[in-house]
Amino acid sequence: MNIKDAFIDKVICHHFSSDATKCIINNAEMNLQNENQEILKEFFLKPFVNKKNEYVFSHHINIKYNVAYQTILNMFQGAEFAQSSVSLYKHLQAMSISPTIKDGDVFIVKIEDILINNTYYEGIGVVKIEKKNEFIETIVNSQGNLQISIKKGFSANKIDKACLVIFTEHTPKVLIVDNSKDTKFWKDDFLGVVPCNNSYNNSHNVIEVFTDFVVNKLGKENQLSKSEQVHIINKCSEILSNAEDVNLAEISKLVFQDKEYEKLFWAYKEEYETKTGNSIANEFEIDKKAINIRKATRCIKLDDTAELHLYKTGSFIERGFDEYRNMYYYKLFFTAEK
Image (cartoon, rainbow, N blue to C red; front, side, top):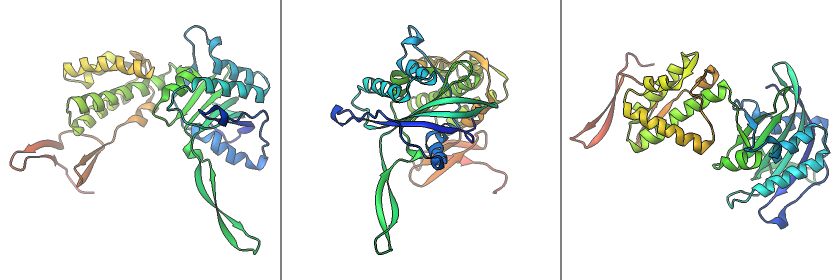
């Protein structure tokens, strides 16, 4: 995705609060200055530039019952922007029933000329920011001297939740930013999206489920050492990096020499799919970009005295226990210092 030629066409902002008396609904678009376009793009578009995981709108009965989808589609088809933004905000408000959902400003944005694969598309963005940051501004006082003024504002690096809906020639694709711990609210309740069944998502999800299983199941519950965790995770990455197509049953046999680990993995995969809503295909074409991004580097913290950063594992590292000192140790072998 290239945003060089993109143009922020319309912006409107509403304030959400769990206290209904503090909610603010705007009925008019904000006035935009052309000279502010680069700053606006930095804020509303840059967080999505490197996002590879794509989602599509969904509904368990019929897509027409997905409120976010229908409202955003109406915007794309020419419905009055401010009025449609109020409808989208009210849907967000209706879905915000959990006490953990924080107050914040909700920006709804219409964007022109997003370049993808040599074609320009339109997009609708929704950005929710829950915390303002303090910053220092210098101003000239009446005596002509510089003075400090403390103000509060937003940073593009501090976006809590956001989505960008891009209207391609086929189905709208959705990119998501969610820096909260509870991703269910934003993806499931408000937007109603599911991961695209494409090679990138499948490749990314396979690496993620292998990593989660090794770290959380084998590492925490089965006491697998961190060096062994790195070895298994990077073995998985290496196998996938050299493959063109994936058969998950065959991959799991190659990665896990222990049949008990393999059995635990398949049970964990089912739990992962239920918990995250990410269905992982058993056979798919590999996307090497997703594999390269996920290749593991593991940091092993040794009490408060040292850290080991392992890019790969193998026969050069051994873990043992010194009975005399009653302490664990790592033994490293190398050919030269660099």
